[in-house]
Length: 520
Image (cartoon, rainbow, N blue to C red; front, side, top):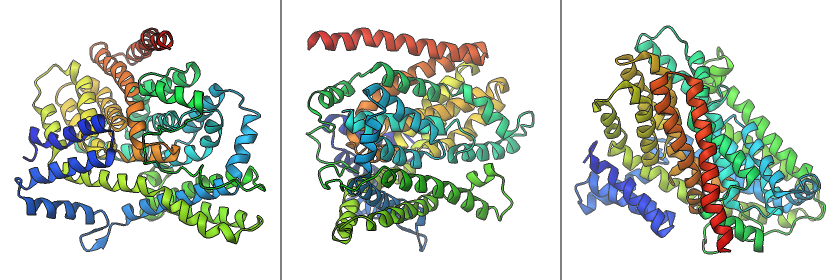
């Protein structure tokens, strides 16, 4: 079954179940069982052992603890505690009141959220979780649905991080390119130079960023997003009442402290940001034995360790502020307990996502899709567009942008080195773009989980509301990669992508939005 079309079955089953049942735990769990059955030729005992193995290796492998995964789970727990403190201290309410006096419209709140997401580009995990803490008080007050907040977070985190050189993603990609260029004898362009030149070629990232501004400014609500926004505006229901699983939401648990001040929210978040960035640089320099540039430091940083250091510092800051308020000790234990509890749904989904990722890895789904590219006998003009689609399918099936980078970038370099070197950078950019697209569409991506967590949204609501926008951006990007394959002109392809995006938005507005207004 490995590295054959059968390896796609678990991902297909899981995605169908997610759409039909809208129950993410059952859907991912079924995908895990199907994958384990395939790996063990449908032997029940072997399947059970397989499932147990992929579970415990999340925490313990090769005689040692899997520190990275454990740290990320701990960070989620600390984030829950931090969220509880921000709510209980009254800081979130004070910030919301302050912003309401300045951000007086839904449009202003949405634009503020998007800009915040673009500014915090240092890491997608950090972006997903920090932006939610900053924006949620304001978007809640303006009756903006949690599903839309999750969309803004997710579609302004990975797209900006993948085109930012000074970020964990940028550094990782530059590091990969360095090794690939040496291995293939490519000397006419350096890794950093190549990355910079690929920024305008990442048509999906650019289309996604433009689209979030269009959605924010023109209220371009389509698909199930329209339903969520209609409910939020009419009766204040920020969440779908049919769901029973949401992370990071404490609105019904704590009454905000009457002594709450804006700095009770702002200072812990600033501490989280500053300490995390310092820790990322510090762990990167330590990994390279003190001889690293900033780019090298980010390429070798320990993101999860840095997040937990920043999270602990932020929680300690909140504890100090809390102890200065009246009657602090009576609520301190409750805040920690409720904060931990809010993160349990997100952790459950994340663990299952890791498990299905391991199963799909053993089935060699990525290798099968990569082989499809290698065996395709097509004109080099079509290769950027084809690589975009294959990378998207791989990220969709595996839930991993970075895993897709690691598999597809070497293949793209090898293919272009033997066909058409003039399209090397468009082909590499297509891989990066496709990986982010697939990441946006899959329910098993860690960034999808964390974006929903940061927004306090239901995970499946986020997946389904973001999907139409991801497909629109992907279609325009695909056409852009087709255009650059034939014209070899970056700016013509980029212009076509943007104009096509504008045309699709206008046409969709006419067909969908006006139709909804007439129906109502």
